[in-house]
Image (cartoon, rainbow, N blue to C red):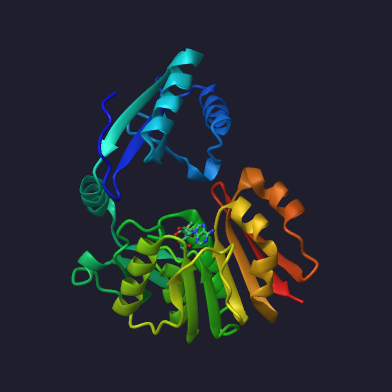
Length: 295
Ligand SMILES: C[S@@+](CC[C@H](N)C(=O)[O-])C[C@H]1O[C@@H](n2cnc3c(N)ncnc32)[C@H](O)[C@@H]1O
């Protein structure tokens, strides 16, 4: 395969699809295949295409890794499953994605409106959140974000300050501000996401506190918050639990999302609750959220 020169934001899209709609071997095969290459289930995009074939996608930047996956797939000679590779230039997938992204309601209060639909969509009964997601996570379409927003709605009036861990598009910070928070901090280890989030906060007239590119493992806040919102990989939550919990004020709240149902028990076993009290769990599709209160 020809090695292409990847610019920032370019990706290889790898699709595994089952030729028959009801292929019971598909999901176990996919889970096993990707776990052999240390790819977490959270990184996979599962969907059904129009002809109801099962399909799963992953996006990579490394050509060497792509070749390793392809070689391994071919050596398994799995019948009825296809392996396809597509090269996506950043501009192509952003344009394509914009065509398919429209205003949507989230929780019982919010309407997420892509900035290019601002003039078209009238929003009288819901609180608008205007977004230009760019390449950042947090368009409002994903269940893990929706769970976070629903939980934050339930906590309305009980938090003035927020630490948004992994801001993505900044959607949670904006929702928190609309729910009454006035002291909003956020970090993301992806600098491009921080820039997208900053722009979105401005679009929604949200005043930002400390909003920088930082890695949770090394970030030092030097203070605590009424609410800490963490929509992250299960492993990131577990590995950084001490740091995350210390950023919650006594009596404040911690909400953790991004936990796949299959990882729920592992999360509950490995996320220590000595300093926090478990309040509730929410579920949407194959994702879970856990809400805690700091003792
Ligand atoms: C699942 S997205 C959540 C985005 C948004 N908060 C939402 O709920 O839709 C996770 C975000 O956390 C960031 N992230 C993941 N691991 C991180 C880490 N160790 N330190 C800082 N940011 C991290 C990612 O870059 C990504 O933008």
